[in-house]
Image 1 (cartoon, rainbow, N blue to C red):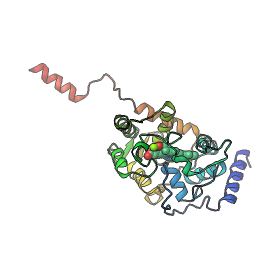
Image 2 (cartoon, rainbow, N blue to C red; image 1 turned 90 degrees about the vertical axis):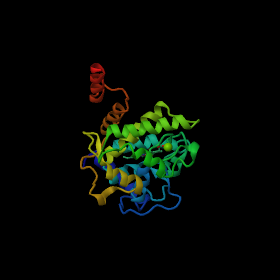
Image 3 (cartoon, protein in one colour; image 1 turned 180 degrees about the vertical axis):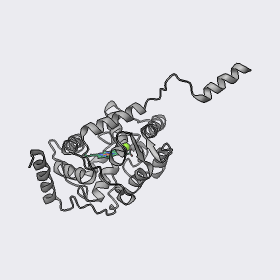
Image 4 (tube, protein in one colour; image 1 turned 120 degrees about the vertical axis):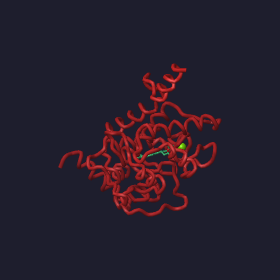
Length: 260
Ligand code: HEM
Ligand code: MG
């Protein structure tokens, strides 16, 4: 057995011993207080791929849960745990809870696609009105990187215009690009940078993996380089600058102006 395989197996075994739900897969509706800001953490908890109660989430839990739910490789899942652990305010913490994720301006930030800003109310409960505003930018059956970028930009403009406490640092931007890339990574085509809108909508609304719509996790394990590649596609798509080439309608207008 290869060393890396051993590590993953070991991690899974630890996690399973501590949390009998791990790897279970069956979706169960969340409890009344199980509303958190990450739709995917909620989803994995609803499937029992990470502890359903959202408590005591360790590195082995994240490694096993992201492998079971999405086929993330160990290096990627472990890196995500390292990024997430600051959510637990205890020094040298070895676990976080999903409730830790609700703290504003730690990992949770303004201008989310499906939650309102902390200034306006709950920063962690799914907000239908906000979500519909974001979804309005997903204008075709296949959501492109540009459409996802448009929804991100629109949410930022709205927050910056109306939320006097709007905050969005360079770190937030990096985190946010990863989140906006996430639907493509989990459910879409990472080379084309697009994803089926029905799958994404099902996921956001139900906090459930869209297996009953025919989706299945990727056969090849997803790694850090995949996330970086898709995040870069999204980043490029957030530029509002176009090429110097005139649009057809502008050409026609100029032509008419020249004739009059
Ligand atoms: C948002 C944490 C993994 C998809 C968030 C937010 C947090 C978070 C705190 C809220 C940010 C905001 O204010 O919008 C985590 C942690 C993870 C993790 C701790 C693992 C250790 C994932 C994965 C995916 C994902 C694997 C999907 C592949 C998303 C999406 C959002 C989000 C789409 C944006 C929600 C919105 O804008 O409404 N995550 N996340 N997350 N996360 Fe995660
Ligand atoms: Mg937020």
